[in-house]
Image 1 (cartoon, helix red, strand yellow):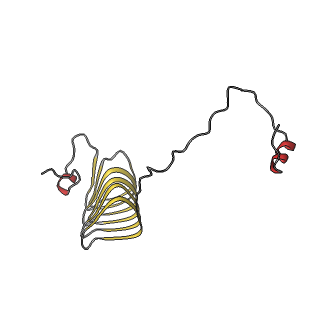
Image 2 (cartoon, rainbow, N blue to C red):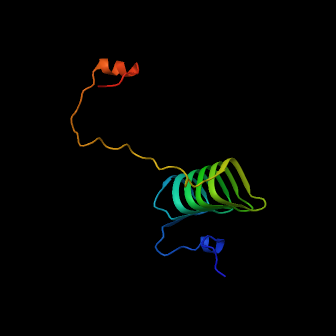
Image 3 (cartoon, rainbow, N blue to C red):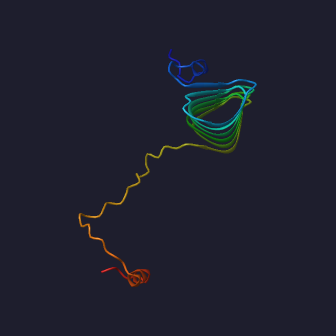
Length: 158
């Protein structure tokens, strides 16, 4: 039987070549965290983060903003959290703030509060289209104040 790549046993396993940061239990960190594939929080962090995996241990705390693929919360998160794939709130986990997720798992005892919503794929949305460039006619025309005033009155440029 195959295991899910984000199952707890696999979640904590570091992949070779991945950029992993563990913030220990007695460490407090403030700032912006960049180029980090996996962040493990056992201490306290106040930061902005974009990462692949976020794991907050039972006594760990994160406040700030995070955009991640997968978040496993056993401690506390407060702030703006966007989870592109799966948000897991463990029994001891507390998540509050503005939270967006694609898939959600909350264990008995886990808490999720604030502005909470699912991420929806915008498959049906039309792509934003830039206006077509003008034809090969490269003449520059100047518009007079009188012409602009006429446009305001519903007239067209000649």
